[in-house]
Amino acid sequence: MIRRILILGGLSISLVFAQQNAGGGRGRGAAPVKPAEPGTAKERQLWAYDVTIPPNYTPPKTPWGEPDLQGMWPLNHLIQVPLVRPKQYGDRLYRTDQEAASYAPRGVRQGEAIPVADRPDRPMRQLSLIVDPPDGQFPELTELGKKLQAEMKSSYRPGQTVFDSVEDFAAWDRCITRGMPVSMEPRNYNNGIRIMQSPGYVAIVLEMAHETRIIPTNGMPPLTSDIKQWLGESRGHWEGNTLVVETTNFNGLVGHTSAGVPGSPGPLQPETPNMKITERFTRVAPDTIEFTMKIEDPTVFTRGSYTVAYPMYLDNKYEMYEYACHEGNTAVRNYIQTSRFEREHANEQK
Image 1 (tube, rainbow, N blue to C red):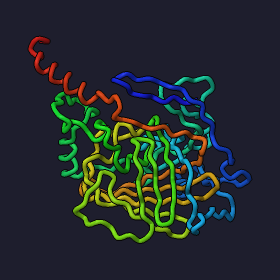
Image 2: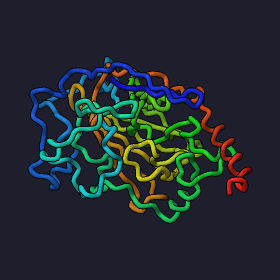
Image 3: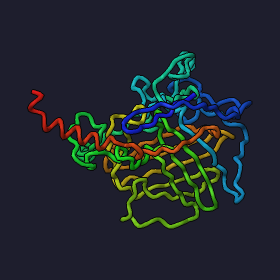
Image 4: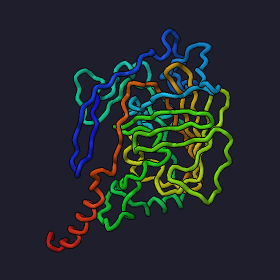
């Protein structure tokens, strides 16, 4: 069972829906590739634990001959894989056998109730979404990055109490977008991702916040650099069985991460129009895609970039409902009214 949370007139309503996982067994009969011991360089290779690759697997093809990635690939399994790795694990990307034996995600434990809309549907050994740098930490900001961070506004910003106009809110507050790379990272609900294909195009439908990324794969030339977009402009091409998507032309008005991403390094991390994101989608089993996403923004990162990676699992029984964020979204108005009232009556409260 899962819960969906609707926000209507400022009231949160939890609805419960039945949801089952798709079959397929993640490549039954094939032994997973495992590292020799924890903490070694071999263990840090991707997919050492959480992906089972059938031997000699060949992905299906579309009628026009491209690798077929189509289907529903929700990210519920990543709800408790934090973006940033807990520091006690150092450079280690996976739980050891002993750690895995004693670990089960919230909601997977027998009889445990959790106050979230969705829940992780399988235990994961992966300890962080960030795989590069090797310690799984979010990059340090440059001096300009720190300046931009200080200027960011959001209802999630700790200590922000002045709200006078929509400019005092982030894009997600205003139901515009979660932005990139956040839209390809988990939330604690509404994690649906559907991939669709047609000759020359791939479409990625995002349950939150009800957006579709249209990715030409037909050699279409890029837009000029002066045309900026909330999700950037994507162009894709095929390298063997891998879809490579390069995205540029961001407007820089969202952020590298947000408080909605589990294990986020604080709610506000600035991005700039100089950001470039390179994603790679490789179907390695009937129900598994290996996904990597390199995020480059040397304007704000001292090390220039970081990389997120995780497996995507097919679940065509996952039901994606409309995420109508604007319907009944009174949060912006309520914040402004409350902020103005508090400031007007500040002396009366002393």
